[in-house]
Amino acid sequence: MNSVPIRVLLIEDDEDDVLIIRKFLMQSEFFQFEITWEPNPSRARILIEHGNFDVFLIDYLLGIENGLDLVRFAHEKNILKPSILLTGKGDLRVDIDASRFGAADYIIKSELNASMLERSIRYGLTQAKVIKELDEKEKKYSSLFERSVDPIFLATEDFKLLNVNKSFLDVFGYELQEGSLYIENLFAHKADYEFAIGALKDTEQIKDFEVELLTRLGVKKWFLFNCIFIPDQASDFCCYQGIMHDITLRKQAEKEMLETERLSLTGKMARTIAHEVRNPLTNLTLAIEHINDELPEGSEAIKVYTEIIERNALRIEELIGELLNSSKPKELNLQLVDVQQLVEETLELAIDRINFNNVVLHKSFAENLPRILLDKTKIKIALINIIINAIEAMTGERRELSLILQQQDNTVLLQVKDTGRGMSADELEKLFDPFFTAKPNGLGLGLTSTKNILKSHNAGILVESELNEGTVFTLQFILPG
Image (tube, rainbow, N blue to C red; front, side, top):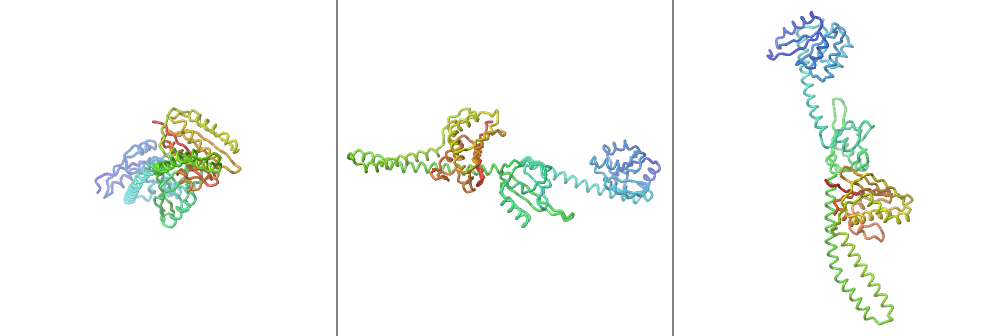
């Protein structure tokens, strides 16, 4: 016999039935029962919720009350103890309702005996133990699901999202109740989506796939995308489970490191070229001056050629100066600057070119933006380079230039959008490289200088572009502390 008694709450308003049930329980050879009798349904609810019982035996008819209400009460309170319903006669509807409301068993009193009652309690306790273990596991994994800092999702076989965790909602800004959301909606590029889905269908998993995904507002972020197919043979239901790790900051750091190395290499090359070219260039200039002094008067043909040599020597000197200026670290004259005023002053410098090219200007400036420590002159140079590039990129009928100034958390963002020809991925990769340009007569040093100026301010610059869709430059000025 089990030495630990099973605590039974008997909810029954018929004293004769109480005596019968007590007698049956006392006949058990293997279990001891500790019985608490309560005929009143209201007091029974208190005992169900706050008492310390292992099983509930509940009569179906309790005066004006219904035993099913007590079974449902225990279920709604998430009390994982078995409830066994006792009734005077068989009723299929009552049997079905008992199961639906969470009863462990349904027994007809006229058929009741000691072994049946003991077996029903034993099965109920076993079932309750299993349910409790499952509940604990569900809570454990639910906690892992909800507390994960990485976005997690569950999706159907056709890649419709079934469930997502809080991090997913925070990162992507979606709400599932907004409508049908599919994994495809997250991908920034269709080719990446097709590759991921192809891998999932072929191998039932995809691991550490670096991909750009879109938030609800269209912001692109880099993620390591992991997903696996999980079949459920029991219910013939299957789903995909995925987890995504945000690597946007890492990708930005890698890109900035590469650009820093390029600028450093450019600076070394510039200084080497300047040294190697300026010495013979100086000798050439001195020689031309000497020739001019020695030329007899009236030698017009020779004078024309010497002037050509002088002009080109001067142009070479200017190019060397521009190359050195674009690559060397900037010495800053920092002061607190009203960013909106700075943008307005920069636009004034470009207004003639804006009007001449029939560009429609749109401005959207947030109010009460904080002032920022900047070198006003140098930031103007950087910004004018971006604005002029945007104007020159717009050669079609639709020519719209938009400047958007706003604050996000501890960062002031300035976006410059154009409706120009856009750039390919290869052009974007080389955009800030020295001497890279799509202009027939351009030097390819303007954006290199712009990048250097912003870097000296610890400011970031992001560029998004698609062919025939235009380009967006985003300048990021981080506020102190």
